[in-house]
Length: 135
Image (cartoon, rainbow, N blue to C red; front, side):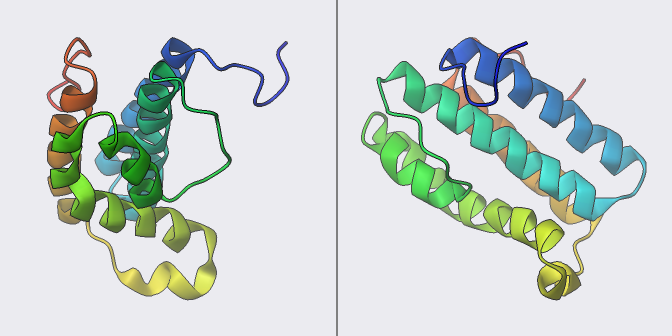
């Protein structure tokens, strides 16, 4: 078994991102918006890190999607159009992890909307990536 943080292979990061994407959808099916938002954040974080690692980026422990996006924009300036999505979805991570922020009153509709936008974001980073939103 590999130690945590041992893999730098972008494909491995994408595999875990896909799992988190499916967890997002399962939690939406269970009407658990907070958990769905958390896993959406986790999925996008891993997709961004996979994209950056493909570019030769040095892996950092960071959870803020907007900060990761700042680095990604250096390699694909068109990604800048997803800045608001990244800011919003970063908040889902903190809302699930820090109780005072859990009063954001997320709805499944909010997460579903962000999931659709996130699919476009992932497709811009990885055009070959299978579409996930309709699965």
